[in-house]
Image (cartoon, rainbow, N blue to C red):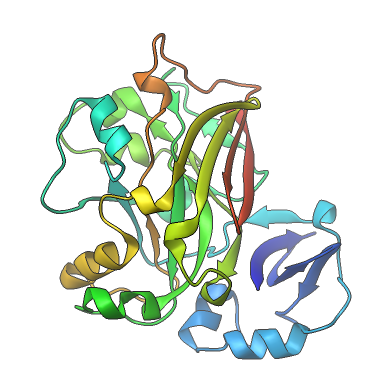
Length: 282
């Protein structure tokens, strides 16, 4: 399933994206679940599937406002420097353990929603990534069991304000400006992607390809990342892990290429779809 969170008019709900539109699930489940995070926490993906199977769309994809698939994740954790090409372009060396930092939920927007370049910087960069959405509680899980705790996958753009990111050795400021990142367009359930190492990620700025990589090139693969993170913090249904960006970021190009008002940025991942966002100024 492609599970989507969206706003129709003043109402926020969720459903299943199908050819031609969205089959709403929230109403068909009697309003028991405010959003997909609560669906995952209740282990109710089967109920969503049963309630929407074979139905015609209730609304077209062009009639909705996309929201991040998980509107209110308890945690958004990101892995830095997780492709060799990105490590090399930054002049760093590979680390023994994953480099983990956090994003706040209000720093991300959904598909087609504007990503906002803050007025305090002209160094607004893109980072196309694969996002992992946790489906079952995970605490100190071993690598071999980690994928069983994954509900699905989505595209992610870890929009980065580079000068603020480099104010100190801690990256948090540059990664958390309001509406600077993007997440979507939907969550594809894990049963449709049994092997997440087979995906291809491409980032395009105004139609120009800037990044391309396959997910088998992750330095720390998804099971290792889930196991590592769950060793220091319990993961809950709806938590999000962005798994890292490949080489080709704008700040490491000659000359540098940054996102500006009027640009369009896309992150496409095979078997998932395209996350597209316009760039506006604060």
